[in-house]
Amino acid sequence: MPALDITGVSKTYGEIHALEDVSLRVEDREYVCIIGPSGCGKSTLIRCISGIEQPSQGEIYVDGKSVKRTLIEDRQIGYVFQDIALFPHLTVRDNLAYGLVVRRTPTKETRTVTNEMLGLINLRDRSRSYPNELSGGAQQKVAVGRAIATGAHLFLLDEPLGALDAIVRAELRYELRKLASDLGLTVIHVTHDQEEALSIADRVVIMKSGRIIEVGSPAEIYHNPKTLFTANFVGEANLLEGRVANVENGLCTVDLGGHLLNLPIHRFKVGERVVIMIRPESVELTPQAEKGWIGTVKQVTFLGSLNRYVIDVGRINIISEVSTKEHSTGFGVGESVSLLLKEDSVTMFQYPEEGLEKEVALE
Image (tube, rainbow, N blue to C red; front, side, top):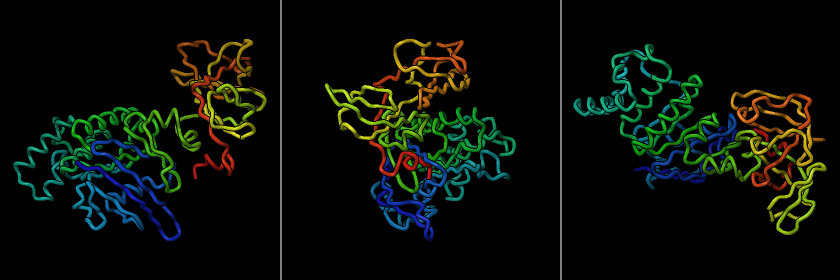
């Protein structure tokens, strides 16, 4: 079964650096999602793994063997694109069998494998249908099944659900993940959909400007990001600039524009500029009272299960998301409220040398 090692891979196109010194290990049977801004190098990386592109520098190993001089067709790697590239003149069954037929697999084996694939993707009753008679989701299932039928155990998925409607995309991502687990596949899944990545990945890779910025479990990436870029890019976050006012008795007191916050963080010094990150769901709102910070509701957005509030707290705007079940009536624009920041949900960073805006910029 394949483990994948990417070591110091760079890719240049003239003066454009699409990838710069990328290193990553993907374990056998691991499901890894790669996310990042448009143009960050996600697709270039998996094109290099597949052999469609050749790295300018670095090595790629599958099961400990370099694939630098291995032809695309000999790499035993399944590749599924965003564009659903089925043959329109072939039925579902024939599309699934295509790779096996090209490899001159015996007819009996081809029939057996194709029948298995039809069962796995739940399309037995559509085996004689043509692609234009299927929904987008069903077509993508066929594309995935065709790749699996070739016998590959390492799969590269390049925005495989990007062309589908939101509801279909949500359903199919869980089917993909289950299929990968059931068959023991190793998968690298490139997506622009953060929710998709967080919901199905064993690990998430964050890329920016051709580099890997951070790698971690979905929970680590969301709740305890190691970089300000990740904190800002993944989900929604309040990033508040401040300065350490005091460090005493195991607490770090941060001055956020005149508002003080005591945090159980020890590695910062008095006077140091910092940025704190807190997710909107960790900002509690109550009717105005003496405790917490007092603010004024500037904006209310209904999000179904949540109300999203923008609160003006002096010179700071803070975003809070509150369950509509808990606060069915909600708060109105102009209403005064109290804010309580859950201190155990705060992550603190040193203020970046080049400034916060440049640090979190998408390019």
